[in-house]
Length: 213
Ligand SMILES: [Zn+2]
Image (cartoon, rainbow, N blue to C red; front, side, top):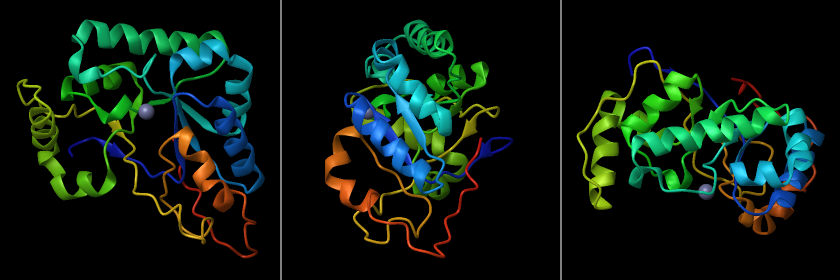
């Protein structure tokens, strides 16, 4: 992937509605010594700055659109405006928006250039897909957009991009705290996974926490 840096992550959540689920989840991760990542819609940060600050205290916070827009459908200028606006909202409340996950994972390779230029890492690719496609992942993105009926020229992935691919979930695994590279996809799935999240971290459990940006 050229100069593109690929980082590791442990636990991430997309927060588009239920900010309280995110706060509860963040607190539980902190209790278990796990540094998580929360990709929060800008409008939620605007509406609940104190709750978001609680999350940001011990975890990485990123953006997830302003209002969960479909970025593959928007002109580049509008995409840029939404990302910048979200960065500003985070900053206004003393938080640094370090990363970004495109809502519904809809984006074009040009969208990634916006992030790269702003020094924001991306977390919108699946790790397996990223590995499988290697240097040709820009084609994969072009094809998936084509399948959704969105045609554009297959631009290369920007070399300056910092990518933090997400992994598939093992949350239904009762060994919740024993494996690394998991993802809690959405805040509204919190109820479903709560029992695993709140299960006690077993003694001597080795959790890989090398996931800092
Ligand atoms: Zn989402």
